[in-house]
Length: 107
Figure 1 (tube, rainbow, N blue to C red):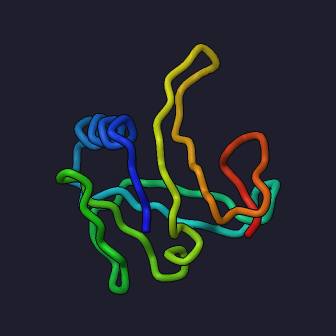
Figure 2: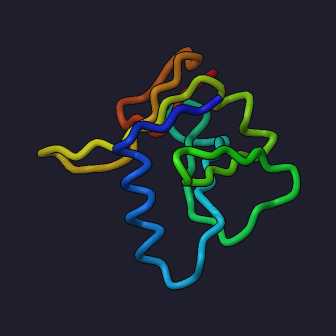
């Protein structure tokens, strides 16, 4: 399904440690929109929703809703830190087109 690099796992853990409330995990989802038709979304969640696929990456819980699961199959999530800024990067081998921002794609 999804692959997360060590850099992405470390970045998410840093974000989770800075929250006041305990977090159940990181939600990764796909929504309609963006410049290419679909866009990736990420947010920290306090609880698991019924129907979520629950993935474990070295103790980091990642939550994926059933509607997003097929569109995220084979995706690698990385965290890059460079001169032009830092952020999460999605590599989707199933995307027929991606935009320059790296946050949206078409299937």
